[in-house]
Image 1 (tube, rainbow, N blue to C red):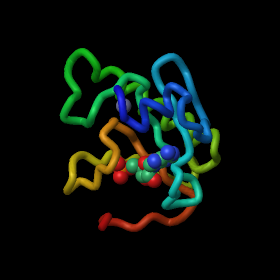
Image 2: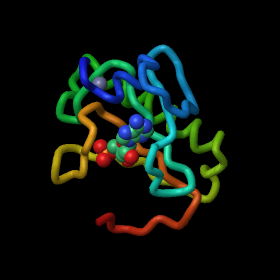
Image 3: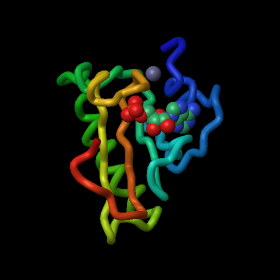
Image 4: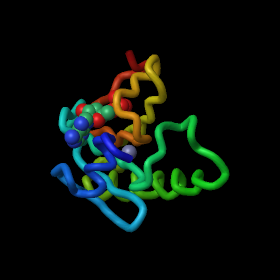
Length: 114
Ligand code: AMP
Ligand code: ZN
């Protein structure tokens, strides 16, 4: 999608620090990390948010969760614990309109979120 920063990252039109990639998914380090490990996992296909999931594309999310697990293991945060976050919409804190899942870890994470 034109003017979508994460579509541009998926297309390698914008550089990013990629930690995982396959035909459908790409994962890269967050440019403004909120924890020692902070990776964003996205489908290459443009889906705006959870509100745009449907029967056709929801399988991608299961695949993304498996890749979140793999990334957590590969980056050494699986054993101590980590968090997977999806922000949806303005009050949910979503600032980029391409669905993404944050993988956060490497420090004690507080709850509830702000
Ligand atoms: P959210 O607030 O849930 O929409 O998350 C968007 C995330 O994208 C934020 O944590 C930003 O730091 C991150 N971000 C924005 N632009 C880039 C970029 N070019 N490369 C990596 N991460 C980015
Ligand atoms: Zn996009």
